[in-house]
Length: 256
Image 1 (cartoon, one colour):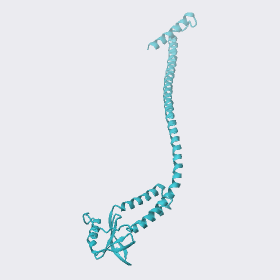
Image 2: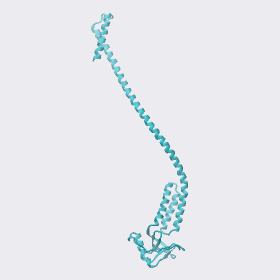
Image 3: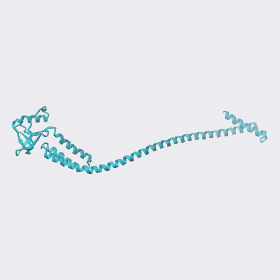
Image 4: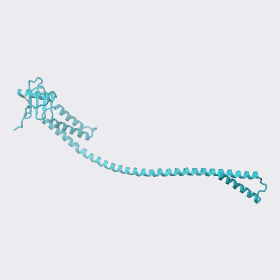
């Protein structure tokens, strides 16, 4: 209000001054008021434009500050991304080196696995003849896996090691299973009992005939009646039908 009043008084003084110097001696008081109002309206219009420009300038300044903050944030982000890219480049280099080493290892480990399978097959053929179908099938599956391109080398090696572990476990387990064996030239259906790798015996289902595998001669032989009960008890123990207890088993000594 004070600015408006000052503007009006200035306009009035200007008009009065003009009247005093005689530029418009015929001007009336009403005309003086009209001139003052016109000047005041122009002043309002100018002030409005000034206010608008000031507001626009303030808005642009705020936007500029916001953009500066975004630019600084992007710089920080770009520095962090550059560090990550450098780290990824180093990891890629290490991976490429590892891949090249894996290729060399694969070329070396494949022949090793084939030799391991051959050695396992030879061991089974020289071992006590228990669970032969199961053991030979396992070796055959290993050979089939080795020929497959869709099986990773790591999986192949894992399967080979697992086969060795199973064979190792046979040495400390007692198992009983049904089988058909040849005794003195005659095929007989029997129950076979394996006690670790120290004894491999059999007994017919009716219990009339009991025998053992002779490692020295490589054939099945009949045993005396003194082994009928121990072998029957051993078969029941292996099948969880009887509590584990001491057994009398025929043990073949080494050749002289």
